Image (cartoon, rainbow over all chains, first blue to last red; front, side, top):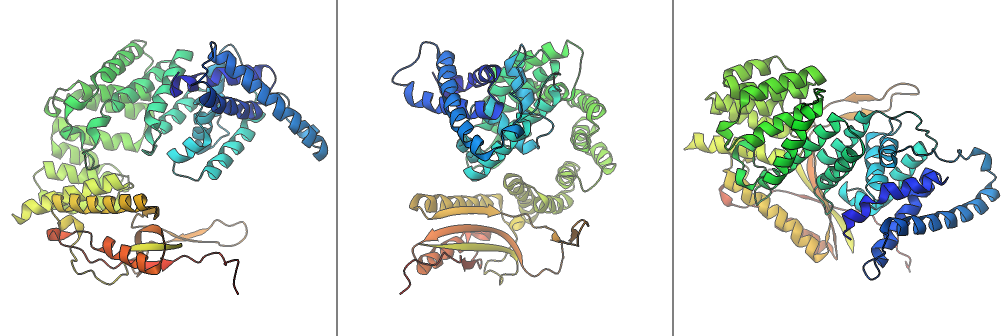
Length: 381
Length: 135
């Protein structure tokens, strides 16, 4: 059994322990121990019933720890302050766990870490490595998060949008370490889509698949960014695109539009164009209008200005841009791009250099510096 | 072993020999520069001397405490700030001589015209734990 399949058993095993009366924090520790044990023992001696094996080992670990803990607690006389036994998971254990780990009482970084550990079955070391923080820092973050949600009773169904935000963060704001956070986010969103029938869950899954499909084409061999228009589309993953489009179409047919479906629709239109020149920018602008209506996000309006620049020409794009706050991230980069398309390389070069100074990540900074350099080099010729 | 901080400055270091801003280089020169920097870090990882490397955005904020119950005061960025750090690399090496040798190599990263930048890097030793045996 590969590691991802092993980890996919985590939520179910954890839920069994909680249903038997273990409190969430202790149960989660016990399941982690069982996973580590499984990685050690299974290669030589694979169990016939992997989940049953994990439940047995985790439960034993939990009882051992609880016994040791009871002794210590008596000594410390703090039995009264312990929260009551954890909530009994409802019909759908997996869903219950997603809601708990994305609980609004948690900060986004805590919710991300807890989701990756308790739902994803990753070790603290793996999560720390993925977010480039020391393992002790991540361990502390996770244990605080567990304390925060330990007394939470989920008697009402949670708001699925909080879960989606956490999964979106995992997908979008990871580093590229040994652990593939984007793939992990897709796995967790897929698992969520199996547990709950909701068009926005499908929308987010489609969005992830459509963006992930372009991954190989997104960076050059030297690590520099390749913009969408210049990507080698033969390197896009057509299977992921087909799956994303299919999931999106099913979701859209239910006529309950949300921001993730709208974003996925834009990604799908890009994926659908055989060449950058054949992109259906008019439809993309319409989707940005929908998205702006749904979210009222200034970032959406900035992206819309780019689309307008493609659909109606760079002048129209610059007009749309002029209505937006100049302090928006990437505003200067968009202005540079539109001025270049408008036939003003000198202004574009100056703005690209300025945008590079404002960039919030190295890949983007390098890319923008290269754009300025490209235009300056042409000017010198 | 001793840890050293190699500091790269946006502003505040003496002017390098090959002093051309990066957006005036050719795209190939930028690629060559990036490759040199990545190779350098990868080589130090290979020798077990690399600890950390980070880049900083050019603009930041000054913050200070403003008394009980009041929000912190923020100010800046200040155009007149003389010293502006661009990033750092932390190395763990056997000697000061080795640290100087590595800083020299990093400073030789190619810039405009494919020629070394000769950028001034600041080399700062970390203050360390006291040794057990002192006599």
